[in-house]
Structures are given as C-alpha cells and as structure tokens.
Length: 621
Image (cartoon, rainbow, N blue to C red):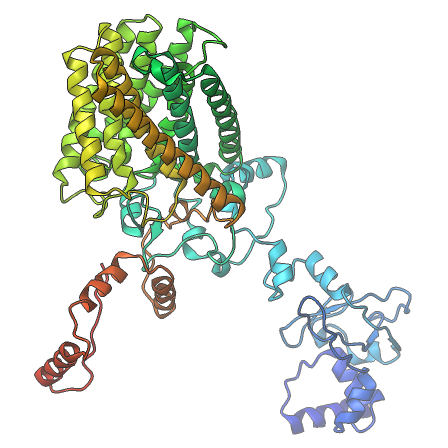
C-alpha cells in the first residue's frame, strides 16, 4: 500500500468514518486539497455556492463544483450535468459510480477536474425526465401532476388504463397517495352502487346538499372546481319553470273564461321559443358532463333527491309539446308521444322497483317531496296523449301515477322515523305536493272529455294543499340559500293556475275567474323573481354554480384522528347552518345573561367527581 493509501487509512480511523467513502471525497482528501481539515480550503476546492434567487417557485441551491468527466478519464468533452439525490453516499447521473469499491484509487489518480457550472433549471428538467421529482415539494411542479379530479373523469379511470395496457403504454405516475386522500384512492375499486346511507350520514338539509361537520370530501374545498363538475342535474328545473309558463299563457289566450283579458298569442310564442333554447343549452351542457365526468353523473343518480331530477328533462319536453304555439303546428304525430314516454317507463321500472324491493332505497327511507317529480311525469304524459287523441296509453300512465302518488302522499304525511330527508321547516320543495293533483285533474278531464267529478276531486285536493302552504308561510322563498332547484318548485304553482283556468271554464263566475287571474299573477311574479335572482347570482355574485359538495363525499365514514378533528372543527365554523350549530344555538337561548345556569352546571359536575377537569362535551350525531 502506498503512502497515500496509508494516510487515507489513518484519517478514516481518526474521524471514525466508514470504509466505503465515495471516490470523489477519497481522492480529494488525499491528493489535491491541502489542509483538508480546513473548511475554507474545502469550499475553495469544490467551487462556490450560488445564492438562491427569488423566483416564482421554490428550488434548492444551485451548486457549481468540479466533477470528473468520467471515472476512467475519457476526457471532458462528454461532461454532463448531474443531479444529487437526498440519500447520502450516492450520486445520480450517467457515468458516476455509487460505491467507491467499484474503482480502485489507482484508476482515479490521473483524472483531471474541469469546472462545469450547472445552469438554472437544468437539474429540474433532468430530474423530471428521470421521474425523480414526483414527490417534489414545489407547488408548481406538483400542479402539473394534479390528479385529484381524475377519479371523476370518464377517460381517466379503468377504461383508460385498459386502453393504455393494450397499447403497451406505461402508466403515468400521479400524485402521491397522501396528497389525494385515502377516500379518493379507493374510488376506482368501489364502482358499485353508491350506498344511500352515506348520503344521509354525510349530508344534511332539505336537498341533502350541505356537508356535515364530521365529514370530508374527495375534491379540494379551497378552490373552485371545473364548471362541468359544478353543473347539477337540477339545472333542468329552469326548463320546467319557463316551459310551464308558456303553457299557462297559451291557456290564458285560448280559454273562454279568460277572454276578457285579451291575451295575445305572441307571449306564448316568445316563452315557448325561450324554453326550446333553454332545453337545448341545458341538455347540451349536461351531455358534456355525462361524457367527460361520468362518475359525477353516476353519483347524482344514486343521490336520493337528485335521482328524481333525471325525470325533469323529459317532463320539459312534454311541456314543450303541450305548449306548442298554434302558429308553429296544430297537431303532433302519435309516434312522438311513444318516443317521449319510453324514458319514463324505463326510469319508473327502476325507481318504483327500488321503492318496493325493501332494500336500502325503499320508499319509507328515501321518501322526500322531490319524489313528486317521478310521479307527475305520468300525469303530464297522460295529458299530452289524451290531447293527441290516444286512449289506452294515457290511461295506463295515469293509473300507474295515481297508484304511486297515493302511496307517496301517505308516506310523506306520516313522516316515518326512518325518513331522514324531510326538512323540519317549510321549504319551497313542499310546493311539489301541489303538482301531481293539479296535473292529474287536467289529465283526467282530457281523458273523460269534461271536467267531471274525478277531475274536480283532484283539483280541490290541489287547492287545499296550495292554500295550506301559502297560509302557513307567505315568504316561502326567504330564509333559505338560493338554489337552481327552486325553478322546479315553481311549475306546481303554474300547474295550479292552469287547472284553475280549466275549472273556471266549467264553472264560470266572478270567483273562479278572479281566482284564476290571481294564481296566474302569483306564478308569474314568482318566476320573475327567480329569474332576477338567477341573473344576480350568475353575473353579480358569481355563485350560481358553487362546488357541488353532494357528489364529492367519500364512500365511507372518515376515521377520527387528531388531524381529522381539526378538519371537522374547520367545517363546524364554516357551516354555521348545520344541525349541530342549531342545537347549540337552541340551548343557549335558555341560558340567562349572567350565565348562572352554565356556572351551576360546571359546579355540579366538578362537585360530583371532585375534579376541576370536567368540561362540557358535544356528542357527535
């Protein structure tokens, strides 16, 4: 062993260093660097450290050092920038050895060092190319690999992976599992029917659209989601509200009992044209959501309230056929009715079958006022079919609708303990109670050819429900957060007004005529108010389409931990309208201003257990 080798061995023993020191340090420590123990000389030999410059993203220090062009001394023309890894005793890059034992010290005795500064960004680019920055803390780099929305995309799930495997294309690395969340990691493995209990456990409110404080969501809640993810199926309620107005103004213009108003047919034509445009636009946008975010549509279908809005586009088409202006066409082909009613038959076989099956989606558990949307389509279809001269088909759907409406009406009136969706307070959704009997009265009148006793019974039921709701609470649309679903709650009021016009044609007097005009005016004012509110939220407040929390819940209850507790606390303060917050507020109303009741409660609890650590606790429901 030469003199240099003996010096190196003695130095290792003095510093208690391991034997396999990297070749670079081993060569510097014995040959070129005088005064190895001097820190300043080491820095002078290895180069200078550039100061970090402020940029749009965080990056590590860029170091300019002297490196061997090759461990075998092939020259400096093949020098290449290298990237240092975080692990000790290891250097990443082509041509640089990892262990020192791979090359003896004699092979590097004649290697010359050439100073080659590393340009800014070169290491980052090379690192990404080597898939070394998948876990990079830089937010700008991580944003490029953001896969949090892919679980809802149609082409980023199992089908895309299968296509990639068939083509032999390797899977692209995504974000680390801890950044996506444990619930999102298991979404691809849970593509079965979403359990309805999770909606009841994770959401609250009359429309099940508010997240409970103890729950988490799969998508980020600190920024706005893509537009299609925020576009709900309840947007078809706008089509229901406007198209029903077209029918009402057509009835006002053609009914003998309202001839004194001298209503022109142009209003019907304008409203019908607007309705057609709305149906086309809303349906086209939701079709894009179905194509690009199928998982979001699937979750809406399994939502116990949103599923009823899948009847809305077909009901809107029926409204367009009924409200067709006479200047456009006077008759419609019978085949059109069968085409429009086919989707109703398919959806009803699925939904009504679940109501009777006794499973998780039995009617006693999922019954809510929105279920009237799945009922009223039968009566609207029967009304259109009878207007076109059909007999058997309209009677069939009328019978199916009447049977299920009776069961639903009784279930909602009973307010069974198993039902968790009925709101404690009156809400615009309760106006859907009026929709079915109003349309049923007109449908039976068309089937029978006159507004007979059967039609009048259904009409009187609708009027009783209408005035009972209005008499209890006049400001029905106040005190609640605005929602596009409110548009669907306006067409029952319009249906009651149209039924009153038809009734006034049979029983013509001042009372019936005045009632018809009053109900039409109320319906028009409500729709106009909703139109103004929709424009205000869309173009002024920019919150017409907020993040749709209802589709982003996890498929299982989150585990309670210290980190999760902090998250729950954040949601508690953010959502003050939750049931827990209302319970606390209700409790504080009975506490005196001097807080003697609270103090007495603390004293009793402390005296009973003899400790001062008694604290009030809130039980999580």
